[in-house]
Length: 249
Image (cartoon, rainbow, N blue to C red; front, top):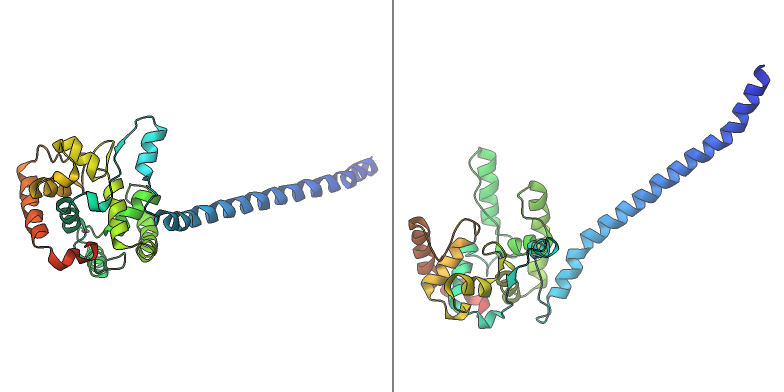
């Protein structure tokens, strides 16, 4: 009675080996696909950065793409930097990244201060430069995480090395979100003040600039007392910017 069982076991063994072999091959195939997908995702921002150097290319942000695929749509009116007017350019720069002309994508002084705050248990301050915000908007996601920040840093350094400062600022001012479905300085100026960005007063430009950290809550057309105080500070800084904006002249 045992002989047939042994023979059956022997006959089944090749099938089991073949099944295990197919399983290993399938796992290897999926691992190769995952590695290839990871490499494509890792290299895509590098290739797109090279493409975005061309002035004729008008990049879109990940938030804009999300608005498209969810059928919400958006308002973005691409405007060359020289047609925006200095008021909004200087105000945004002094509000978001006063050392823009002097760092190489990452403000090391601010970054060290953030690390020290974190180590001492203090509430972390914002240290995102305009290149960091630009690569976040172009290639990453908006929710905060250490993973996103770790990706931002090398991408910002690469982006800053590949682009002129003027081009970085031009892209940023055309993709940054200024309210639900409102992207870029031109669309924001038209939406909130009914005029093109180049016609904004220094005060209006400052109000737009201080809206950026929280554009879904702050309204530059109906500023609170606190927002007005911030705008006054930025308006003064922008008026005295001088060498701080030299790389954009």
